[in-house]
Structures are given as C-alpha cells and as structure tokens.
Image (cartoon, rainbow, N blue to C red; front, side, top):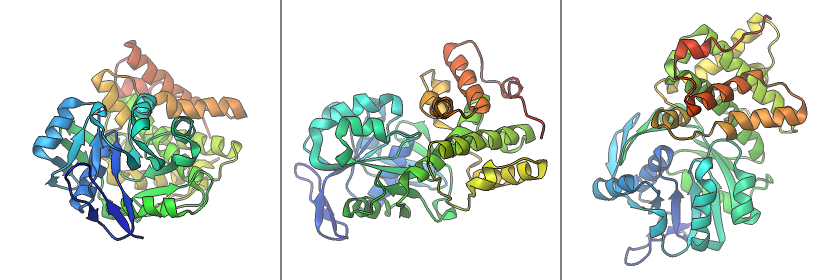
Length: 362
C-alpha cells in the first residue's frame, strides 16, 4: 500500500509508503483526536487537527501536542478551527462527540472530496447518521481499543499502554466488504497501533458499545474514574449486567458481536448462576484493569456542565431494547441518573448513585 499524504499551500508532500496521494484530517481533536493526531504526526504523517475549541487549537499550534500518561512526548502539529478549513480532504477521521457530529460534518462537506472517506472513530453507533450527511459511499467505521482524557489546551493523557493490546483499532466497511479503501484507512491508523480490518464491522461496533455502556456509562453515573468501580463488588456486578443487556439486545437486532483482545461476549453476557456472574466480572475486570486511571468522556462532560452522549450510548441500547422487547433496566438506570445530573436534580455521588441499582437474586 503506497500512501502519499499532502498539505495545502507551501508545505511539502510526504511519502509514507507509496502511490495514493491524499490530504488527511482529524475532525474533532479532543482527547482522542489529539492523541491520534499526535501519534500520527510523530511518525511523520501530515494530518490536520480540526476542532472548534479555539484555545486548544492555539495551544496545539504554538506548543505542539503534548501526550502524557502511558506515553510522554510533544510533537508539532497543524491545528485549525472549523472555519479555517481550506482545500479538499480525501481522508477524515471523525472523533467529535455525536452531539456535535451534524454541525461539524455540514461544515466539512464543502471540503470533502467526492471520492473522499470519513472514518468514524466515535462512541455509540454513528455510521447511519454520518452516512445521511456525507453519503453511504463515503462512510466507513472504526472503533478505538484505547482511551484518553483531556488535560488542558494542547495536553492530553493516554490512559493505557498501546503495547498491552494486540489490536488498537477495529475498522471496516459497514457492509463487511474488504476494499482497497478500508486497507488504506488501516494502513494510516497502523502508524499509531495495529488496525484490524474486519468483515463484521457492526459486530465490532456493538462490542465497543458494550464497553462504553458498561464502564463509561456506570463510572460517569457514579462520578468516578474507573478504578473505584473495579474495587467495588456491587459496581462490578452492575458492570456485568450492563454489558449483558447490550449483548442480548445486539443478538435480538441480528448482530453477531465480535470477540477482541481476549473478551468472550457470550461468557460475559450469559450468566444464570453466581459462579457464571463471577466469570463475567472477571472478564470485565481484566479488560479494564490496564485502564483503571481512565475517565469516561461522558463524566468529563458532566464535570464541565455540558450535555453528555448518554442518549446515543446507553440510551441507544435502551431504545433498541424497547424495539426488540429486551429489558434493559441497568442501562435505563444509567440514563436516568446521568440525565438527572445534567438537569441539576442529582449530584455525582458514588455511594448514593450506586444505591439506585437493584441487583437481581440469582
């Protein structure tokens, strides 16, 4: 695969491996987008980081992107606001919050090549909404298997070692075809970490949704980073029930969820005895222990007093559960708690909010 990345104006094209010439960008350079952009830039990939947060854009251009936590480096990057976009992009990684996707994509449209590609790397299941704006033919999907948090303008924190997992990204065409286009996307992401191309992308997407609904949803509702959840037996039990609901809803929707990085979704979801529940909790504990210092983006939103993505993550599962007749009481409770926090009628209190969950007797 030959990739030639280009910049606009007087910046020189850079050949990364060979014969596809393209201009690339990250749309939504928050914690995840900046981390991806910084890793690509460190490997010599020219890529624009586009974000509406002007102070962040200014800091990135002035000081470079600073990655802390499980990596530690600073690298020069080229950042710009949505209104500063010029020229036409051939490859765009979409990392905005879903609540901001429509506005950002509408601004991108005049700058997206007719044969360009938007690769979603967001939480939830954003591909149908993205395709409505940019077109199905220009939409592919991806899921990140790593985490990051926003520290300050120009500074982000990588919350797990990339080397600790064999797969950093799962990507694919929505219809499951293995195309030259998805290989090109994978070759680009490989500069940060291994991108696994799957012929069952929606299965991979629902696996990420399971992880988002469980730890991201619960830790946000409890107002904590991941570690206190891992240290609480009741919270871990809630985690298993949250994950189980997502798996059962996905099955009802006809999705075959993938197993990645040692996760066995059947053994996580299908528990009828206490021993099987402990097995499920064990899978989730092992998955999240390397990420124990992570803080969910939904919690970061709640702490900043802005609307979270809970309705397109846990709420998405609740909606599909109602559609297919699958009960989702734990995801319903996460939505209820986070919505109450957003409305100012509940606070982020670990013990009080954990008490809201009723554990069934097995």
